[in-house]
View 1 (cartoon, one colour):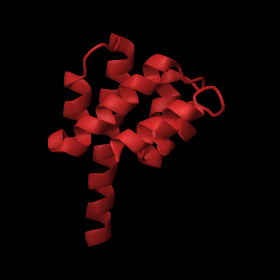
View 2 (cartoon, helix red, strand yellow):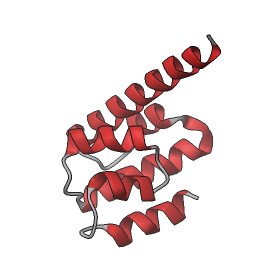
View 3 (cartoon, one colour):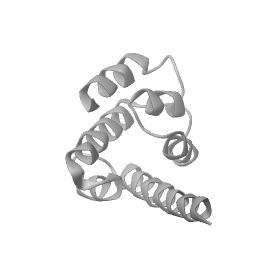
Amino acid sequence: MASIGGQALEAATGAVDTRTACVLAGQSEAFCGCVQERLGSRITREHVDAITGVARDALSGEGMEAAARTAENIDPATRDALIQCATQTAIQGALGDGAAEN
């Protein structure tokens, strides 16, 4: 799944914004919106590699935040953005799940 998403993300580089490319990689709208806010709308090769790698690791059971923390070969700003977005998305999901239960 992450491989297919990565291929879609790579094909979309330069043709779409960060959010759209991120969604094509199989990530949630909430996560991708956050990533675009922090990294900007113009996706770079490094962003493609980082999002694809983190998505692949997250699918192996690590979770998005842990995958972002252990990702190799990404700059600190990109790593921080991915960690912050994974955390924010997880909190929003937990709050949303709690509200649905009430």
